[in-house]
Amino acid sequence: MLRFVALAVIIPEVHREDEINLALLIMEGSTELTQSIADGANTTESTGVDSGLGDTSSTAAPAGGGLQSTLMMVGWVAVFGAVMYLFIFRPQKKKQKKEEALRKNVQVGDEIVTIGGLYGRVVSLKEDSVVIESVDHSKSRVAKWAIQANNTIHDD
Image (cartoon, rainbow, N blue to C red):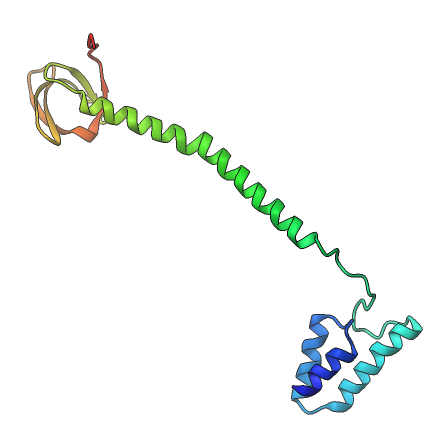
């Protein structure tokens, strides 16, 4: 492990993949191969000939590039979240509140339509259900959450 650290200090331009290969070679006890790889990387710098270790040029990424790209990504996520809220979540909540108000304001005598398409007049109300009477005078008990529309106009 100490030899790997020493080689990494000697060869700072070797890519991560090459560092892993060097570490594997050192663990196997093959010091001659690691020395030849190190010598090949050093000769590339002086002669300009590639030793097969990849790009050994000393071009570095700009220092502020990581922070700028991170802020840009966070900005796009915030914009996407705002669009999702404005076009999906907010209208859905408005619709749910409207439906809840419709179900709470049902009164005896109202003509309603259920989500199953059953038309009828409300005969009695309970906490979580209503009894409706259809055109043929049959009575049905329906859950309040199943009321889709109230066709009676109130003078509120």
